[in-house]
Amino acid sequence: MSAASQNPPRTVTVVGGGVAGMSAACALAEAGFRVQLVERRGYLGGRASSYLHPGVEEVIDNCQHVLFGCCTNLIGFYQRAGVADRIHWTTDMTMIEPGGRQSPLGPSILPAPLHGLPRLLSAKAFTLADKLAVARAFRALMRPIPPDSTESLGVWLRRNGQTQGALDRFWRLVIASALNADLDCIALPYAAKVIRELFMNSAHAGSMGMSTVPLSQLYSGAQQFLEQRGAYVLLNTNVESAGFDPATAQWTLTTRTGAIASDFLVIALPFEAAARLIPHLPPAPGVAQLMAQIQQHQHWPICSVHLWFDREITTLDQAVLLDREIHWMYNKGRLQPWRNLQGSYVELVISASRAFAALSREQAIDQSVRELADFFPAVASAKLQKAALIKEVRATFGVPPGIDAARPTAVSPWPNCFLAGDWIATGWPSTMESAARSGHLAAEALCAGVGSPHAFLVPDLKPQGIMRWIG
Image (cartoon, rainbow, N blue to C red; front, side, top):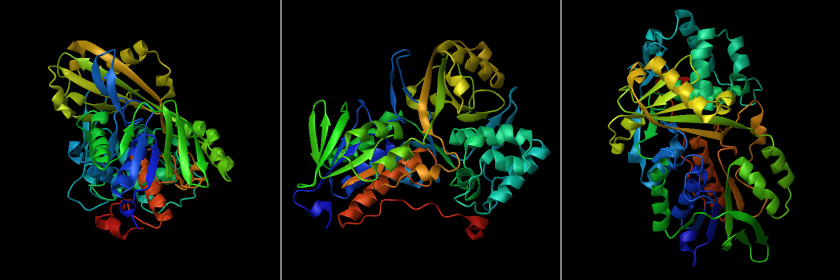
């Protein structure tokens, strides 16, 4: 029997309005539960949100977030929320060297996994030795990597004869920045998954998507979806503690503005926020183990520098920047044409750099503008009108070898309580896709527990071309 057929429908409180919480809430509302989504901030999105920055009087994202064609659950969440048409997709990537020389990468008509080979072989950013090294590594990664491998990506790359150019210009910049960690701090199975999904399985799987509206506006679709189905979205509401009554099988959550009661609870918080809440939940077998798992997680920072110039500095929508501290350029003025700018607005992203995160605002902005001019000569004659520095010190969790043992399932130690968040056991690294998957996993576990199974998890894309016959 579904929740919708019950009178009244059973209630679920989802704590946390990030991607994990929103995906769980939308799935459960669709299944007929009466949902209450509780978020301590005044907006949805969590670490993937936007706000009016008081220093520049502009609405900006806390960091540029991208998705890929292989992010099936994130795309499914966007489709459920009715915002999938607000994503700009591309299969092209441009690498730029200091001095301005460009190397476009992207798919060809060849079958997977050969579709990206022609542009890689013609890329001026790599020497012949670099190209052969990357090709050897790709060939080796076509074979399945044992999921319990304890080898780091850095050790594996050195063992597989990667050149310094391949390490610096591909593995560190593209893969390590995608996973937001140093090469020696990345478990080989996660790196292999990223390579296979983005570069080998199909051209569609590796296509990149970027929101054409601010992230919080993107997620307003989720709020509308929920409210249309009788759900409540409670913003500026911080859950301080929770209790469970076995006699009534009810959860009661305590906030500063009052109590919230429900039949089920989904804790959809980042691992550090979950660790703060857990001591204020009832004792239960397995809580100590869960806390021990959480304590094994560590954060990695992402910094973004937002720059407004009085003129256009490039016609590229996005680019990978080589050999400098800044890694990625997103031309937000072009990606978000609603801004109707006279000049240009670009966002620079610096991944996995604790040194950059330690810089002052002035140092970070000055260095970013100086390095940006190495790639785009127009910067030298352009006037910087305003700038903002965003340091997301808790942007992602690390995925070192052995981290899977610290990732719990969606089923929690407490009755009628489930876990969501990119850090739980989803099989994906710290991404919006992992968060969306976790929400769907929590919703599935909850529905299965009441004898009303639902399939919310969207299957992975099937490999195409030659990859269909490779394990």
